Amino acid sequence: MNRHPRQSCRFQMLSVVERGWQGARECSIALSARAVPVTHLIKGSLTADLRALIRPYPGVRLVSVPRAAFRAWLWGLLVWGTMWGRLKWVLVDHERTLREVAWWCRVCGLTPVFIQETGQGYDLKSPDGGPLSLQTLIGETR
View (cartoon, rainbow, N blue to C red):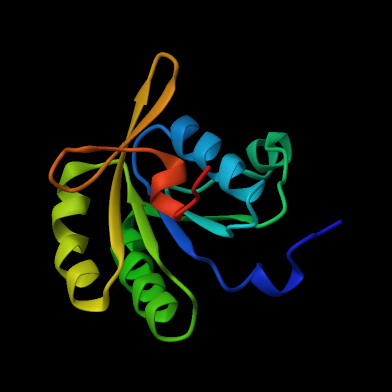
């Protein structure tokens, strides 16, 4: 059952996955529990067998594209999400991509976030390298 039917096409976080995606997946599952929809843009095609192994979560969408089309999809989703969606955050796992999208984020008032996988899960960092927590990022106070 999809608990977020209206949010499935209105992502708030675009997760750009170019390297390993375990950290981004864990982050999106945590966000799903907080009703924050995430779209993962995955560099490279996922086979039907692999896609069948991935457990679906409400509010988490996977978009895998061939490497040659990756940049076009990235910029298309950034523009679409900024103009028509509710995009707030751009999560990236590659430093070069962070540098590429940082200017767009500044101009459009988005928050770029760098994710780095660790042995215990993942770390979130601001573009200047400062640590971020998931709660701080989405504005939760407890």
